[in-house]
Length: 144
Image (cartoon, rainbow, N blue to C red; front, side, top):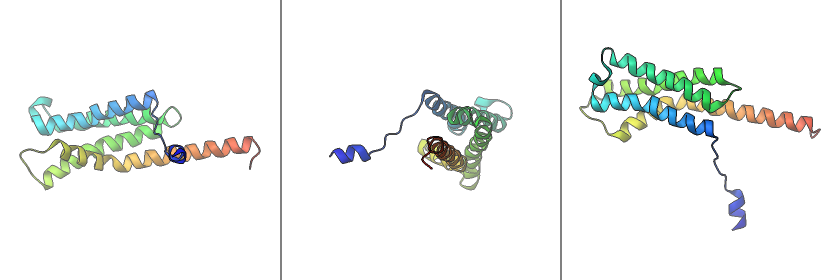
């Protein structure tokens, strides 16, 4: 039983990362959800442009905040692609499969699929940075 407790990995988020997740849910998921569930009149003139702008800006903020100070510019660009990708895939999905109403889970699943490439690149860069930092620490201790 003790081995089970030691082998279990805990996922711990810092305060900026939790804030980034909240920002991404509100700014990337929220506008598209409101647009497709409540109608385009909520956003006024040029509603899709506003949905894409809010999602892109929200992606920039959330990815840059999630990644930290070190790579904020790279992560911000990835966030732009993630936010626009999430909204863009949802738009493409509704053009290919026209429907009068969509389920909330359907909207969320399509948006996550649109953001997955950017999220994967963010995870890759974060892991690479952690491995480089680990190698630097080992080298400074003379273990290499």
